[in-house]
Image 1 (cartoon, helix red, strand yellow):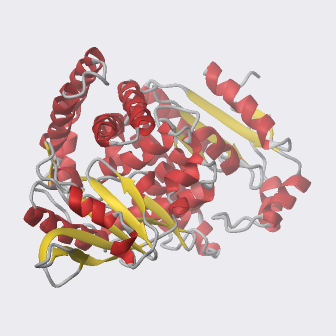
Image 2 (cartoon, one colour):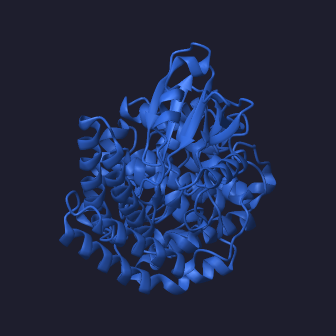
Image 3 (tube, rainbow, N blue to C red):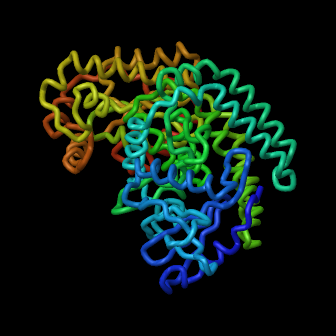
Length: 516
């Protein structure tokens, strides 16, 4: 595992003398040591070799430092300054970037406040839910620009992950229960066989790319109130060149493991609303489970090199928790289809997103909102106001057809779906019900009612919302005749907590139509 003695370099870098007398903070991981001093962070790669990583020589570490800077400048150019040698002069003295012979190599980074790391914000319950939309957007943009890598990924790529995890588990029998590891490996391989053709088709279709590879909360930092991805994997293309949804799955799994299901669902929905990559949703149980299994292995590895006994025990406990989670994620809840209808201002979207993380397989239901789909079909941003041409019968028919198509893809992929639209016409309601019947899954239709004054007050208070509805729209909708309603009617003038409670009871009961 450890291939060279770096103790002299580590001792030097930990000393204020190496940093013009500035105090030094040290951060240890299983593959690197980071030294924080002044406005700089200096990252030293450990002289180690694992089954998935080779930093065994100084020459190899230099190449990996250069790759780290190049790859991470894709998302965090201001953080990654370059590669600098640790040198030793003729008298044996070490220096950062000196004139002597290089003995090791460092990644030089701009230092940021460690309290702005998203994992620290989450630990202190300060990770804002409204940051999940820009985070999802940042990941989606990154994936869209990333280089396609059809030489990796597919079923073979996931088999490499599963078998690598299994091999790693064998090294940590003192931490990870061998019978649980064996069962997880068998279940993962069985799921892989079921999904192999889909994995290969996505690879061949350009959805395996040079991704981040280690996209969890500790590798995202808030800079100027925006999430910034950093510390992407440079040391192994088998890890970094993956299906884009496998890359996303690490972030989603991390949020879910930290008991932030609403955050996880918001990232999931935000990403898919931008990419419309519904082809891969059936792969998420495998992807999420493999990500948790990877963390089980790396946590156990980190525990062995952690010098602080209390932190080492904490890492061992994390490893066991991840292993348990990996097994659960391969046993997802069955899908269900929900429709939330009602006039503008009844709070359909508020209820839909409040329900989403509570329904279906991890990380919850996909929400398909008519307002957002209409904007996409018209080629404008979600917050751009549409004129009358965006609300013609032809466009509206396309919107409702798209809701049906996307909901069908989600539930056929094994995930719950929630469709959010007015659904004033009986034929629209019948059509969305029919796809649940065709799939043989439960359907729950919810119709929200509220007085006109409440609707008007709510639409007047909207800010930064995809809906274009105003007072005139509310009054026009109220004048329509809503035909006999078979969906469950809920009084939406009440606080959202009360509406949500009743909606969850109906979902739990699985009743498909309201009593007459």
